[in-house]
Length: 406
Image: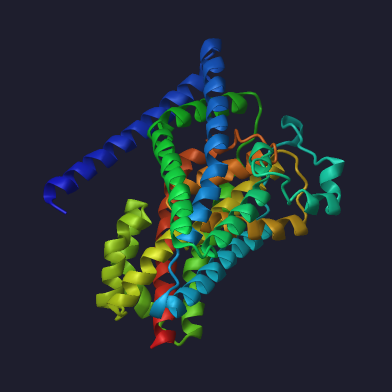
């Protein structure tokens, strides 16, 4: 990359930072003001963004899952590497969600006053386990999307993807894959458009939150919520993954030292894909991994290995659901570990994917997502930690797969 390109990126990042600071400042000022027109406007904007998140998120989850599974290569000599990579990726991701669950139970973030929120209680039909299982099976292709049944969408997407891979006619299979890839690209473009106006959403969500705070809403528990997410990432990165490396007779300290350039870039860039060239270089030149293995596994891990995202989705959905009066038992926590894992893996290539996915999962339950406005200003920091964890996990998976293959 030329010096000119680096300067352009630096200026762009500074401009984005200033824009976010301006949006937050204006949001606080608008929320503190007594101008009723502004209050009505920011509520309108937040409602509009909730609808946009709702519109984009479920199709993105479905299309990302289908595209990821159907385009996943398992042919030839790489089949064994692919199998191990998938196994370790799913394993590390579900452990990350489990760690978040344990920390959430232990810390038990304080929730806003129940008198200040509208309780969301499940219907009798949802409490019936048999009906719940039956409703996982859609009666037509569009029902899960129209009724926002997230689990049904996930299961249907996985089934369609696997069925597509089983089609013997190569031309027909390619046509179907291209169809889904095309729709995925369309929604990616739409998502990028939304991301460009995120400062407007940030302004409105902050303003609405300040208005609610003035009305007596208590947001002090956000600190404990953030603590759960950060600790979940730290425990996964500093305890779980090093122990896993040690179990495979790989030195965690030397691996971390070799990975440091990639982890540093990942932390400050907040982009796993943008860090990929440096990650591959670290794997080859500093960790001694074969170029063939590194160049095959790391791009795949960058797409589907989302430890940090799983922890964020789990913690955010449970916290906001409880804040809005939903009763969460241990069985529900266990089910959300699985959902967060699948959603994180299906998050491939989606800008602000964790945020969009969490909003979609909440909307699917009919849970108000106004608290997402409080989370949004902190999301940049969360994203930095998550990206570093994701890249660290990618390198750990690649190192273990390589050592077990030689």
